[in-house]
Length: 165
Image (cartoon, rainbow, N blue to C red; front, side, top):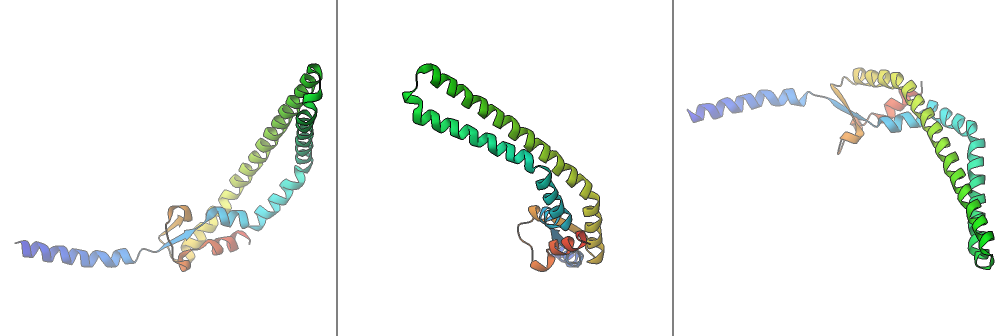
């Protein structure tokens, strides 16, 4: 009886291995493909142009705060308490202004990036679907979920080509 079960199990395994071997899986690095695309490069250039003034203002305020801090360290011991407190107050105000401007800029840039990602999502999904069909794959996994992939199964460059069309 046990010999029969052993034979039966072996036959089942023999039939299941070919089915497993037929599953074709590809891997893509969606982030790399999207951010290397021509659209992403144009978006990045546009972002830099749009926010150049704000970035310059943030750097200017940062530099002013740095100069106040240096002056406080260098000359603070020679100043009377009123002058030192006034200078320390100016420094704190510059730090607050810097933090406010930096957070505002970061939030605005982050919102623009998120809008770009949402806008690009349908195009990325369509390109991934094309890859799936063209390569006759059963599954495409993100590269973050994979420990190792054979180079021929990494379809990131093909995805980038499709995004750049």
